[in-house]
Amino acid sequence: MGCKAHGQRWRRHPRVVHYTFGLLHDSGRTLIMPLMTIPQSELELVHRFTPGSGANGRTTLLLLHGTGGDENDLVPLGESLLPGAAILSPRGAVSERGAPRFFKRLAEGVFDLEDLALRTQQMMRFVNGAISTYHIDASRLIAVGFSNGANIAASVMLTGPRLFSHAILFRAMVPFEPKTPAALGGTPVLLSSGEWDPIATPDQARRLQSLLTAADAVTTINFYNAGHELTRDDVLDAAHWIAAMVT
Ligand code: MLT
Image (cartoon, rainbow, N blue to C red; front, side, top):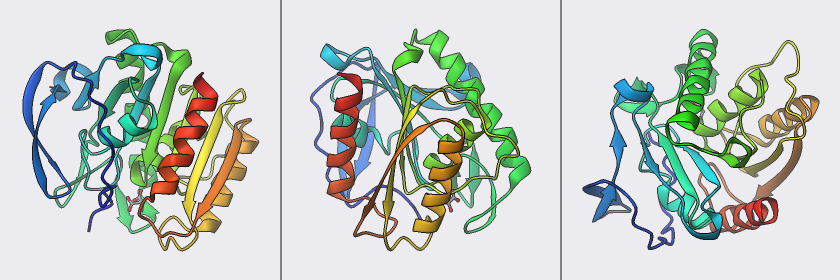
């Protein structure tokens, strides 16, 4: 059972600014890809960071994978969304029978709220540490999460204070019901949901939208004729949304 954003052939941007080389499996093919995976000891979460280049190089995409993904999973997606943006991509530290996640769950859609609160703080420490380690411009830091990754991004936002300049949440759910709304100061958030998604249902997406709106985010929600998997239209619309935000 995996929630990887596979099944899509993301266009690869031919940018090569990394430090070591490794093998990356992509849709059944094995590619030689330059990788920079940093061990957990330095910044708490295993991750890769690619500096930006060109016109979009000052913007950083924080890529947060779904259950069973890793720090390499969403890199092609990030490169499609905003070519040349810096990429910060951590791996979830929780293992569910070998499948990395960003927080524990008790069953499908039933979250371990105690662990979620701890992992939300861990994500905030990781992002703040990465901002200073890699000299990231925090005013141009866009969270891009899919499924479990979207849920941890939503949890960070609902907890506050504001950490992301923008967020794109693909197939997100309500991670927890906050007692008081955070102050997100007008953070633009795009929710990208599947009409037939049995996991991140349309009701969940709409409830999350209203919680984020109550926290002073400026939300847009799009529904696609899809289930939990991403479609080409999700990616194209999100790329247009980002382009309008950062240029
Ligand atoms: C979650 O556990 O965050 C959601 O159920 C989505 C997923 O399956 O990862």
